[in-house]
Structure formats: C-alpha cells, structure tokens
Length: 612
Image 1 (cartoon, rainbow, N blue to C red):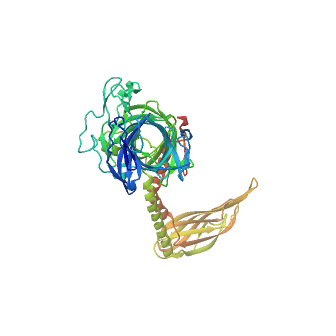
Image 2 (cartoon, rainbow, N blue to C red; image 1 turned 90 degrees about the vertical axis):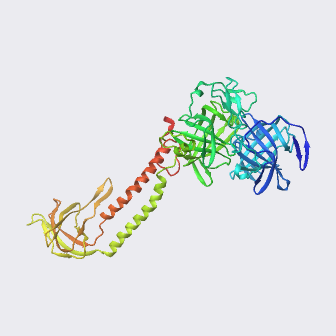
Image 3 (cartoon, rainbow, N blue to C red; image 1 turned 30 degrees about the vertical axis):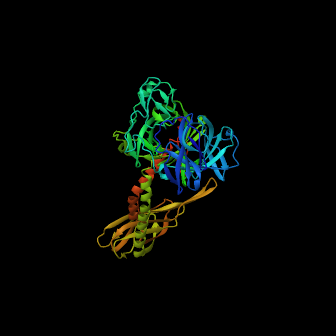
C-alpha cells in the first residue's frame, strides 16, 4: 500500500489481504461525475458490526481528490470540506437529528463505529489495519450526502457530495464479475463456506456484500463476514420447513435488470405477517420484493429524506399519506443478507402511500439508524413472468399501495360524461328555442257543490305544428283546503283522450310558535307528444267538503319543456360513470379501513384495527 500526498507517493508496506467480493470496480477504473472525469487510485475496505463496504480513493480533473463509497450497490461521491461549525464529539449526533452544516439542512441517518480491515493502491493517509473511526452519515431533501468522521481522536472531518447509481458514474475499465459477466464463467467455490454448526456447505451469491447467511441444512444464522464464521443464531428446525414461492438462486429480469433472489425473510406486526425477497445484482446492488396476500411491491433504498408535511410526507412534489406505523419483527430468515439479520430483530416501520407508490421508514434504535425506501406495486403476472413461477397466489383484498383500478377509469370517463351532459343540455335548449311555448287556451270555471254536474267542458281550441308537449295549469284561491280535478284532453276529431290529474291545495298555520305553509294554490301537468289538431278539456272536479263554490282558472300551452326524455337520457348516460365513482370510493374505503389513519378528502368512517 502507498500513501499519496498530492503527487508524491509514499510506500507504507502492505495491509491485510483484501477479502473477495463481487464489486465490478478496481484500481484503474475510470468514470465521469458531474462532467468531471476521474480515476480510481486506491481502495479501503471498511467493516462495522453489521456489514462492510468499499471506499474508493479517486483523483478528479485539476488534481482534486475525493472518495467513492460503494455499499449495497449504491454509491456516494464526496469531497472533504473545511467546515468549522461541526459538533465536536460523536455523542452529539443521533439518528433522525436535523443539523445545519455548510448552509444545508441535513438529517442524520446513521451513526456507525467502523474498522478499516484492508486496503490497496494509493490512499491519502496511513490506513493501518484495525484503524477505528466513527462515521455519521446525513441526507438532504435534494439528494445531497454528507458525512462527519472522527478518527482516533483527531479533529472531525466533514465530507459533502451526493448519492449516485452505477449508471450515473459512466464507469469504464471494470473488472469481470464472477457468475455475472458474460465473458467470465462462475468460479466454483469462490463464495463457498462451511457451516460451523453442522459442516454443511454454504454458497454465497453476493460475496463481499453478504454479511449473514442461513444454513439450509440446520437453520443456523452465520456471520458470513467473519473469517471464523461465528454463529449469529442457533439452528432452527422451522427454517428447514420454509419453502419460498420464489426459490432462492432464481434469476429474473425486472425493469430491464437481471436480479438473483438471494434471501427470504418473514416479518410481521400485531396485525399481519408478510414476506420479503432480497434481490441482488452486482452493478445495481440490492432490491426487495415484498409480498402479502398475493400482492407484490418492488422496493429500493431511498437516499433522500422526504419533507414532512403534517402527518404526511412530500417527495418530488407528490404527497404520501401516512397509512401505518407499527413495530415490525423478523420472524424467520433464509438465504443471505447484507446485514446481520436475526430472528426477533425489531424496528419501528412507518408506511406512507400514494398508490401505486409507497414510502417506508424504518427506525432501528439499537443501530442508531433511520432508513428510507420507496416501492411501487407490481402485478403478480409481472413477477411470474420475470422468475418463471407460474402458480402465484391470486391477490385477495385491497393492499395498501395497490392502484385503484376504478379511479383512472372514473377520471377518464367523468370528462366525457360532463361533455355528453353538456351536449344533451344544449340539444334540449335548442329544442326549446326552436319550439317556443305557445298558449292555446285560457278560461275560467266555477266549481259548485250540488250543481247539475261536476264535469266542466272547455271550448274547442287548436294545437298546431308537429307533436308537441302540452302543459295544463290550474289555479284556485284555496285556503287551508283543496280543489282537485281529473283533466282530460280530448281530440275533437276522433275523441282520443289524454288523461291527467291536478290537485290544487294550500295550507298554513302556526305550530309551537312557528308559522308554516304548504302548497301554493297552483297545479300543473305536462302531456308528451300531443299531435296537432282540434281539442277541448273535460274537467271532472271535486273539492274539500268545506268548499261549496269556488272559481278557478285553467290554461293550456303547447311546446312546453317536457323533461322525461332528457331525464331518461341523463340516467342512461350516468349509469356507468356513477358506477365507477361508487366503485373507486368503495375501493378506497376498503383500503383505508385497514389503517389507523385517514387522509384528507376521505369522509367515511374508518374502523380501527385496535379491535382486531
């Protein structure tokens, strides 16, 4: 190993041998960051209690040096800055804390005590084996990354940069990855271990990144990052009975990337148990497939801190509503993982949803760490096609981030519905404008109890034009009584009749000090599609027993607005949109009745899970 001080290289002997890993990077790898080319000069392998990673020392243009950290397939590019306002001791930092440094608001994501275990190439300091340091990682809303490092009592050093993915760095001169690069066959035994409990062979699929592995023979959880392979947890017969729906070691392509299933974990809270599959790609790192009741979500680590807004979160100008918050406990594990997962491990998980997307935070009090992830719902058919598993469970119920299949259809249909209703109203208005209302008869009559006949007949009158709606209206000075009649429009030509019924009433009074009234002394009825011709009205009258004699007025008008056809057309047009509106509302009701929280805009009553 050598130390590079500007352009001078100083030899310092050799550190411990680097353990094997599947990193595609190597000394001499080149890349581009923010339009600035760089070349990797050296590597430091860093270890902590629950994992390890690579830190690559690189030189950029203008001879500026920086660090490219590689962990779980995610990269950070950072440069040392002379920040003078740093809290002076590691104890002043804690996960979840907010700090203003270098004019940026940061959120502390984790606090780690680490050890340098190996190095190679050129480094800017003497990296002695076993070198201890404390690292505090921080995120910002815009995706920036920062780290404060304390090394052996020296003044803390502040690094600032950003997160990046493999493709962002435009790497070249990479090394082949065993088992993945097409030009290189898998190297048998490169990741082979022996279980310290039963001696069975264990083959690691993510060499150098997997920290814990489960023996498929005896169920022991093994520290894969420890040369002595100490046991993390004793053998468990239940593990041998686990049969994941997606077999470990299966490879498949999701979103254009090949992934291998390397781990399986079951977790649960007080309400439910779900399964999580760990996916690995040496260039993309780790991803997760989470499944519950036949529903699937593709999850990746989020290296930005969402913005808190009330009880909800904002990310990329999209609101995520708080859906659930509970303690999640690891119940069983199988395969390998990038941290020392063990049964009984517990975290406080909070889920925020904007279907089909989800944001999740996990707080690990014992690890001084807060992690964020984001996921997106994927259909079972996509998972089935990717990994060649044909018989996946049919989804049941409504899942927290399952897209509402009726909402998009409702949003599309409602615009067309509004346009059709507008067109229907326009047609009706034009019809009324082209066929104006015309009075065809107006006359006065007198109801007289005990008279010669209660049937009164009008003079003949003419209705012209095509078929028209005819409105018959009657008014009378009723006062706490009523006057009614069976009105019949009769054709003078063929005596064809069009019956109607009119009831004129008006009541009023005072009750409990409050005045009231009902009716208005007027009644009307509309007869549809009356053909042109000569007609008269026959009025068979009756009245309240208190009425002995009362005059009333009757008039008839043709071309009146008759709403039945319009209403019928409206109802027919509204059936499907109303059905979609109701179904999308019902779908959301079924989703949120599983939650203890209710988002703005939803007014239905949500049943709490506390009684489950």
